[in-house]
Image (cartoon, rainbow, N blue to C red; front, side, top):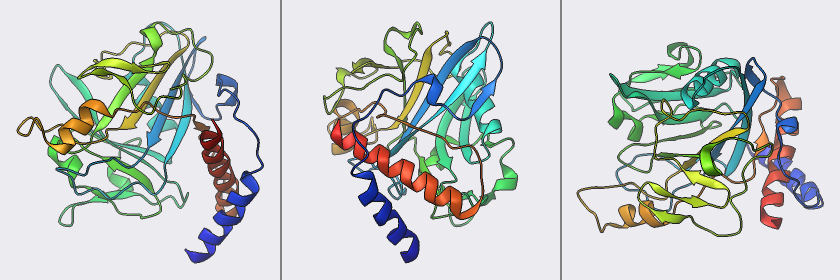
Length: 283
């Protein structure tokens, strides 16, 4: 671990001279799922919440946005995209719940950042290994388990939450597609809005679930970690106020890398991550 951290520190120094950010476009996407003439993008931003209420989660090991792409014809929605990409990228894995007639709920999102092919979730008494994830998804799980199931590999990016800080869903401004570049959340630290309606730069907060969020050509779907847990039993609590007021849309993404092996991947992805961090700092 110390050796890896030393490598990353060296790469960080190199990345300081990487220059200013360029808009992330569909041309920058490495991993695509589906087929068709229409394109949609997925951006997932792992970050630490401001308030840890009703959760056992540790902070994600990095503050980073990662992007994928999805091709389709006809009708499609955010659920079909998430399912297809979880199957297409062996490093992306999802904890999902749902109720009859309401569609899929994303409870946890993980990424095998160290590319060792090992991932899983455990609450200390129940453990799920990679073999329990069908095409990258552990489905039909109780909602509350998202606040207690922790990643079994400390080298993975992961966050899960429902009663604690949850994953929040965003889409491109207006929800009508037409974006060739990933939406820019702009210079404001937090969103402008209340409860389930508002925006952060070119991202709109989605009042819909992924099953109801339809895709158009040029749609972008974003996920970010809530600033705190919405606690209806404590409406003036620190977690609830953070959830209401401090929403953040995903930041500028890096492209999920095509699977390669060993140290080459570690060095390459480490450099990309650090360049991305420096670009966000410079923006």
